[in-house]
Length: 142
Length: 142
Image (tube, rainbow over all chains, first blue to last red; front, side, top):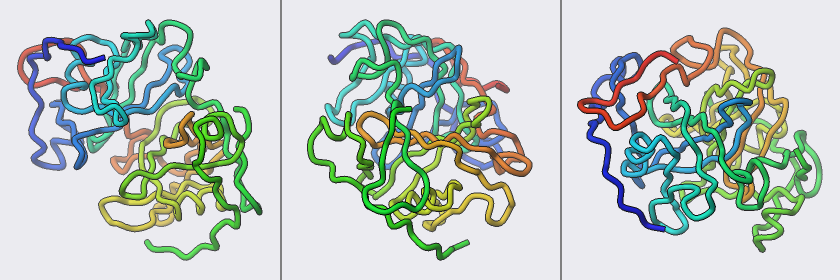
């Protein structure tokens, strides 16, 4: 699953100054202690949430360059170009970053049968029962 | 900002068995090594992404019981009942969990002026320029 791709030439801005991070126009992504940041993929047309995964710097640069979602697989500990084996690529239409630049939203066109490895269109196919109930907190189909 | 709230009586399901986690109807949330899981808040009506934050077990239980978003502030290292000081509560209309139960989506009604501390309606107010450019990767207003 490992893949060699020319990394985008662009550089990232420094993270000096709260104002520059929040109001500036230089991309200054913040990675956590493991070198990762969360990326939420949503359907570009409907806004439906599809999946939440993580990117390290290399996979983020690949995503920017390829305009396809590339994540870091925490379980396999490797670059994960989604769709490379299944054909279920995510073409990135738009990438958004939040105020403190430590989270991403990808507006994607999902190719193939669906986003989830369970063959569903989205990974978020169950709803959590709200309220202060007794016993095990229940899920139901979303 | 600390708050004492009766914790919901419900228990969480065990995380034994991939099939039960992916197809079962017991809520078995997975927290990371820091005891956290990511939660993406989106507008319940429009689906617009609002913010991405984290919950620990206590804040997740508070969210379920109160039907309002309660996060764990990683910077302040404390429970963060959003809106408690600003009035900008997030009423949770629906909570979704993903296939492996390690990420949440909250469909919320955002009260008050907006979600973001910068006074904007959403934290995701900038777009990242795609492509393999030269120089610093640029942002633009979303």
